[in-house]
Image (cartoon, rainbow, N blue to C red):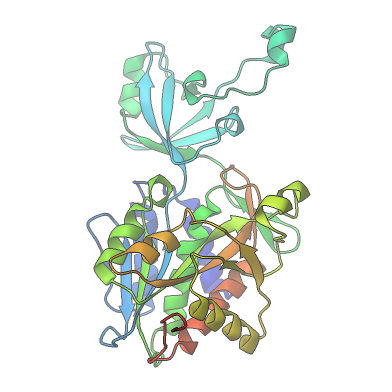
Length: 358
C-alpha cells in the first residue's frame, strides 16, 4: 500500500460516517477518485458513491464496499441536559459504557461521554452485575446543565459515533472504530484508482454503498440499477485467532493471513474459481471461510437483484467486530486491493456463468 492510499484510509476512518449519515466519507472518496481521473463519478439518491470504467462493455461487474459504520442518534434530552441515544445498526450496548462520544451538532462536533455509576456508590449486588444491557439505561453527558443548553448544541436526531480513532499497533496492525466497513469502501475506491486507464474486458461499476448496517439499503438499490452479471463484495469478517473458541462457528481465520474468500451456496463457483486462480497467479495467499447460509453483506443484495448476479466475497479479517477497538492488519488490506484488481483483470469478456448443464 503506497502512502497516498494509506493517507486516504487514515483520513476516511477519522470521519464520522454513521449509517444514514455517510456524506463526509463519500465526499472524501469522491475527491480522491476525481484526482485520479476516474470517470463517471456520481452520488445517487440514497448517497451511494458510484463510478464506472469502460461503461460500454457488455459484461457488467459491480464491486461494492459499504461506507457506513454503526453509531447513534439523539433520541431524548432530559430536563438536566443529559442525552439518551438510539442505536444505528448493531450496537453492542455493554461495550459503550464509559466511552467517549462525538455528536454532529448544530454548529459542529459536540463531545460527550456515556456516563457510568461510580463503583463506590453501588451495592455489592449491583457491582456483580454486568454493564447496562439496554441503551436507554446509559445517559450521555455533554456538559449541559439544562435541556435548553443541550438543545443549543444538538438536536433530536443528531448523529453520533464513539470517539475512538486510529491507533497503530505492532506488526503493521491498527485499531480504530468503524473499520467495519470503511475498509471495504476504501478497498473498492483504491482498486478504481489503480485500474483507471487500464484496458479491461468488462464494464466495471464501483459502489461505495450506504446504510448496509440497517438492511443493505444502498447495495440493494445500486445493484438494481446496475444489474451486474458479476458482483464482488468487499467487507470484513471475523478473525478468530484472538478467541479460539469461535473457530468452531466461524472457521480458522487469522489476522495477517491474507484476504478471505467466502465458500458456500451464496457464492458462485465459477467466480470463486476465478478469484482463487487470480490469487495464485499473483502469488497471494487467501483464506477460506465456509458459510452455509445467506450473508448479512451486500453480496446477498447483488445475488438477489433482478435476475441475479454471480457473486463472490472478499473479506478482510477483523478482530472485535462492532466494538470501539476493531483491529485489522494493513497487510491484509493491501493484499485485498491486490486480489480485487487481479480478479477484475482476469475476467474474460466471454466468461460462462451457467452452472453445469445436465
